[in-house]
Length: 306
Length: 306
Image 1 (cartoon, chains in turn purple, orange):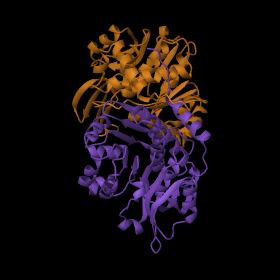
Image 2 (tube, chains in turn green, cyan):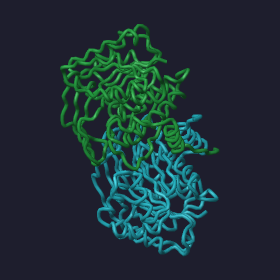
Image 3 (tube, chains in turn purple, orange):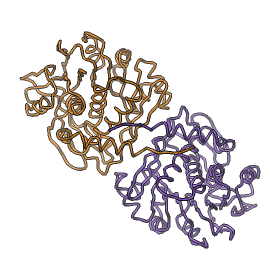
Image 4 (tube, one colour):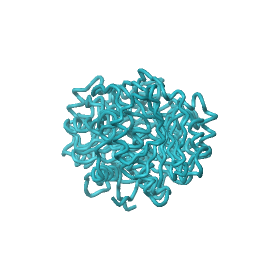
């Protein structure tokens, strides 16, 4: 199955209670591409980078079978840059610097070889840009997953609601679900949001796990309590990459398969936070991933005869 | 199996986004007694009340098989009173008024018929008072469960650590686990706390569920996303009552049985929050409880062949 993922490729400077990392590779498409590559082969990225982006990292991606024809490279410009500092709780962070650079005028052109993709992952970008990607597809993908954030709800709610009509899965966090729906109860919020278009809603709750809603069903995937969260950057994108990568390898997409995809995505995210940036995602293997998934399953399985 | 539960019996005045309730019956022992009564019969409460406490409620308890010989009644004094207002998120609240009244000089005397109890639930009270109860027992109970809060960590940490040496199960929330251990990671915090004495640690995370730790194992019980949380008062005590009540009815206490007990406790708490105060706990039945437990189980069960 052909997967197209659209999102940033960037430099991140990070400070966590465990140390600092300067100008390491990050961005949604980087994490999604790496994470998905453990599950499926036909991965195609759409992004924009400057001349400063390391060719070494691009080679890592292509070596893992990721196609980069949709990554626009602007030799004389600089890549998107973000700097942030995490608080001790690792759930909150301060943005220290944001330099949009190439991202400022990013207007993704989908290569014609990508336009018949079966799966489309729209990373967090301006809703109108996300919408323009859908319009460029030559056929309606089997599944469209969209990630967004509170920022777009603040400044571009009408555009966000427009694109939501076109997607199958929306992935946001609990605060964003409350903001988007205007309801504090996540159960009620899910119904309001599913009425906006998506068939499935994923609510990410960080260290508290993730919820999956359809109109009829709900699933709670707990997060594995970790000894140490070294760097949470990219965890959400790694989750998304594992989630959609797993789905790409399946014959059919239904609620049960989505539950599995959420657990695989959560397992990938739990690796991501063990090291700075993308480092931990470069050298995983099938067996480690399966073992981690088994830990997630064991964590909340019970048998009670009622 | 004989259960003794020690804790407050009180009046609460509550304000939630859904309404107000003036001077309704509350307190740990009230909730624990009612909740446990759905699972076991030999329940014995230790508490203190004033002459203003409604005999109607005491009759409700005795009708449900709860023994009140250990409830000291001081005719000329007033019962403990607490008033609070919940914020829109229902996870945080402001205390508007606290009148200790009879609680100020509460020095529980355990009736001799209670002293050979198999199960002992120590509700949130001064750690030295909790300790004095243990000392009054004629034999070491099979299981001692202790609930406490950040307030005692602030002002009576040495006394709290003394009593922790004597208990089997400690039940606290995530912030309290972090404060008690001095470690942000709940995985690390659990190890530090289990080194203080308890064999099992329950970390309650409100709408995010609960974690159960032993030295070797960890279990995550997710919370059911509810349409409406009407009044969260007593949810923790109702959880504790269901938890220990369920255990009382079991032959053996081990990690697997504790997992079940946590799900039954969570199910009871999910009923509690549907109405003001103890109201919802007065008319439950076995079938409704089983159905709710089944919802909790279904919520996070998956089958993946790896």
